[in-house]
Length: 457
Image 1 (cartoon, one colour):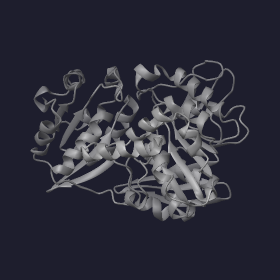
Image 2 (tube, helix red, strand yellow; image 1 turned 30 degrees about the vertical axis):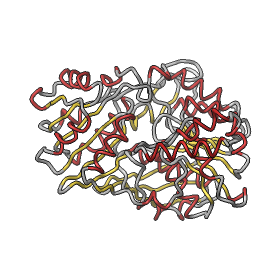
Image 3 (tube, helix red, strand yellow; image 1 turned 180 degrees about the horizontal axis):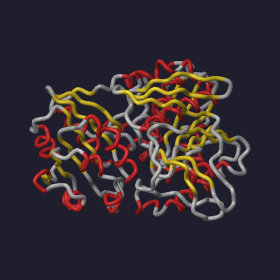
C-alpha cells in the first residue's frame, strides 16, 4: 500500500507539472517507516557515493559503467534526490522489475546529513567519499563537524569497503582503523597552485590539530600534504591520475591502477570532474571492471541535469551549472573562464535546500570575472541584491551588473545580450526552474546519454 500510494502521489505531482522526485518516497515512508530496509533486501550489492561535491556526476558515471559494461540491473537515484525520501523513491520504482537479486546493484548518491540513517537501513558493500568542503553552514556548520558526522555514520557499516580521496586530508583520515580501504588522487600536474591564495579550508591535521604543510594544491585543501608534528600525510593512492593534459575539448590523462594503466579523455570541464571520473573508474575496478573497458564510455559521458549542462537556443550556447559553496563556485568560474562567456547569470536563493547562510559568497575566488572584465552579469534569485553587493566589493563595475530577482525575467534579460556564450550559475532551488525555463524557450539540451538508464526516481 505504501508503494502504490507513493507512486500515485508522484504521478499526480508530475501531472501538475512538478518534478515529484522525492514525494513518492516521502509518502511511502510516512505510511511504512521500515520500507527502505525491506526494499534493500531486493539488492545484490549497494554502492554509496557521499561527500560535499561531485556525488551526482560520480554516481551517474558509475551507474552507466555497471549497466552498459557489466550488464547489471542498476537501481540509481540519478536525478540527485539524495536524502531518505529520494532514495526510497528510487528503490520503489525498481521493485516491479523482476530479476535475480545478484544482478541488481544499487548506486546511491547520499547526502552527508542522511548518511547515518541510510547506513542503518541499507547494508552497503562499497562507500565512496569524494571530498569534504564547507557547505550549507546552517546544516553542517564547520568542516570538523561534517567529518565527525561521516566518521560516526561509517561505524554503522563496519564491513563496507571504503574508497577515499587521498588528496583531501579530512577524507583520507576516515580510512584509519578500517579493514579494506582504497585511495584515489591526482599526481602533481601543470595546473597546481603553490600559494595559499585559494579558498583554504581543511588544512588542519586530523590527528594532532597541527597546521598541515602543503607542497602544492589542486584546489581548496586538496593536494600533497603532511603534518610536521606527527608525521601523518597523504596516503599513496591505489588509483591515480598522472600526465594530466588540458585540451580545448577537455582533459587527457593516464589512469594508473593496480596492475594496469589506461589512457582517458573526458570532455567535462574542470579539475573537479577529473576527480569525479577517477572516483567512478576506481569504484568500477573494485567491482571487477577494468578501466580500459570504460574509456570509450567516459569519452562521451555528459553529466546530469544542471551539472555543466549545455543548451542551444538559436545561435547561443547556454551552460547551466549548480553551485552551492565557495570552492564549487570558484572552480566553476575557473573552469569556464577560458571560454570567455560574454554574459553571466548568478541566481542565488537561501531556501532550506540551498542553505540559509549565504555569507559563503564572500569567500569565492572571483578572479576569473575580474581577470576578463567587460562581461555582463545578471544577479537573480532571492538574494540577488546580496550577490550584487558582493560583486561591487570585488571591484566589478556597477554598470556591468544588473539586478533582476525574477527567474523568468532574468533569463530573458541575459538571452538578449549580444554574445554567443552564456553561463548560468545557480543554487539548488533555482536549478530545476531555470532548466525548465530554458526548455520552454526552445533550448535543446546536449544531454542524451542519461536516457539509457531506467527512470528510477
